[in-house]
Image (cartoon, rainbow, N blue to C red; front, top):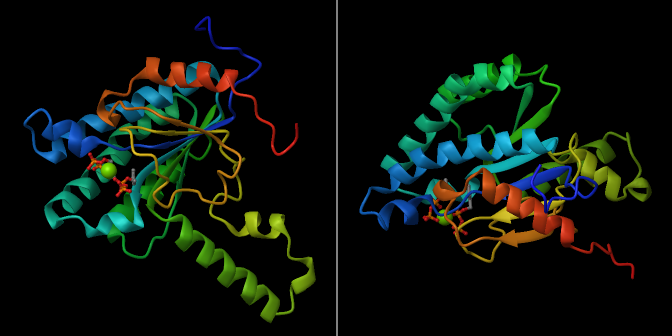
Length: 239
Ligand code: IPE
Ligand code: IPE
Ligand code: MG
């Protein structure tokens, strides 16, 4: 293990906003889609590094609700890439004991993408070493809307009282109900924003923005981020 990583101060859950694929490609005179293709390798690197370190949860922002604003050719490429990633990586995920989960809205995704997601989740359901959560067609505000609708319905049906609604009620209705909150949020490619990712869940996450673009983010970068995290003083409002 890397010397500067304190094994007693590891995050349990890392979330990553994988940004900068397009800029990475354009700066090399390549079409944006080449950045996405290359970015798929960084997914492997981050997952492997988390496995080596024994970090049980990794959540990756793969496609946002707002990304539908992009040109059709890019959208087609991204959806195709998702499908091939899910189909081609499943064996590897199973071999490495990775359980796959997907968060986001299904409405809007094409049937073949939904099918690829369902098959991959099913095949990887027994993974006991690591959980990989892919945020696909995900938006945090939409997630909160969905949670509010469910809770309102439960109230309407008389299953819960308004007075009993607390933070745990809300957390239990989010897509992320089965995972601990992220301890460390990484964003690649320099933007200092959250872009509708896990707004509720990152309330007390440590933030780390790197100028590296996602396609050039490697294992050593994840190790460095974890080393950084170990030096942070998390106070959670205390002293
Ligand atoms: C991240 O890279 C991938 C997705 C959002 C799908 P971008 O495609 O946003 O690349 P930049 O930020 O335009 O460089
Ligand atoms: C955030 O990146 C979404 C994903 C990484 C999937 P964007 O590139 O969509 O974010 P903005 O538009 O720069 O805020
Ligand atoms: Mg971007």
